[in-house]
Image (cartoon, rainbow, N blue to C red; front, side, top):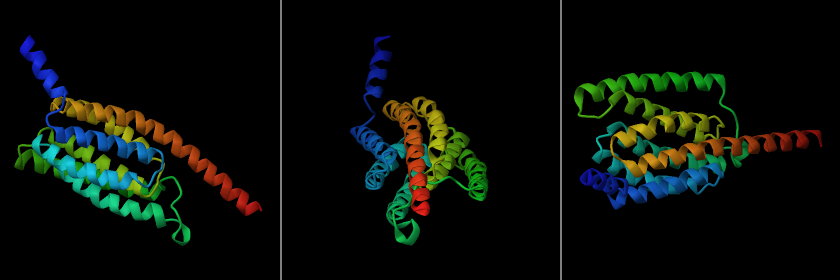
Length: 210
């Protein structure tokens, strides 16, 4: 009994200091994104670089690969937030268009089935299809984040609900707890961005009237 409690405590304290740094920078990244701060991107790049190592050690290969894509998308989002609006202005919050939803969902389904099959039959990956599904959902959500689509937060909520038990199962207790906090921040981010979008729409309407 005491041995089991000791193992749980040491695991909960973090497998390595590297995981804890990744946890804290990841938390800062999501908080900054919820506040619409451009600084979420450089912090995200640093956190993702650390998580490449963390997920590789946990045999979550799809999520490991995801971090490299996140780094590239963060660089893209950094530029888009600054210059992606009309006439190279700051990008406003907007909704995802129906056609955009269609191709994003088709791409996510193709990735989940295809990469899940590969992981299951050609690697020692844990939970290959769940790993691929959360990766696909995260990619779609991150793309929407780079374009300041309001619905990115709804996808993050779904993904975080799935990630919490997966990471706990893999004994990544600090990271599992981090995703539980991410879930709360995603809910907060959705309502914050929705308020911002309404303010921007009212300001635009006022400008047209005047």
